[in-house]
Image (cartoon, rainbow, N blue to C red; front, side, top):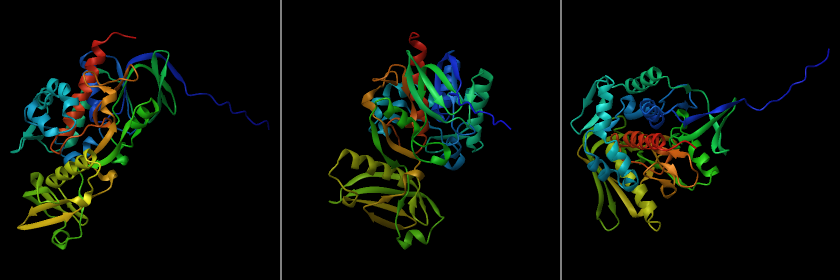
Length: 369
């Protein structure tokens, strides 16, 4: 019997460019698509996982603290190093505007005493479903189970290459998230695309993550949460560099919770800003349940467990007024793929939403290539 000859072909090419390809269907990607629908910018969302918002579903232990009911100026003061870069985006899309937006979609909300905002039912799926309903009603195409292999400039547009097809786009918004929680799709793809297109990527550090200690005052309380607690970062000379009052959780590996997370994030940024400083020069103190535990040279848990990635696409190579690359026209970034991060408490979702909106509004306002 004559054996059939296998003819290998390149993946099919969609020859008509879409106005905007959004790579990543997390917080930034979903918000970008919603803004694109509102601004009548034809777009398509390309998501590597089977559904949108996989990481959003995990935020705040599945409850989704999506914003904090504070002013834009207070928000920026709390964000820290990235504040100058995100200032315009946040002032145009402040936390209270985001809160109003979810209310307008009919999502019942709950405000906590510390101004954190949640869906009233305490389910992150409520927020993701609100996006899904909006995008479906707006007719936004969503390509799921579709990892992007590369983004390449091509004849004034971009070819967005996947295993099974190549899509042409006039503009590309990279909204792939950071490099933590790889099982949820945050595997550093966007940073790789940026590097391949000539961008500098700031090395990763884990942000908003627990620290390790074998102190028995902690380990024997594993599984317990203390709401009325605090943590602080202390220098070798005894100066208190940072302090945060909030939740402290005891774990089998050590300490976690909002107070620990924010102190750990402060330490990571401090180490980056002061190259000569070493973790051993710092102490993290946690006060809870009438105990005061000191951890010298606090060691964070691995990046893959971090709530947020510190590091990413270098901000000096992105225009903060548009979120467009300064190196490649038509290439945009939003959310955690950038070297942008905030404290725990709804800040990082708000940053994703605000930067995504700024990018799409920029695309809507500019002329076509």
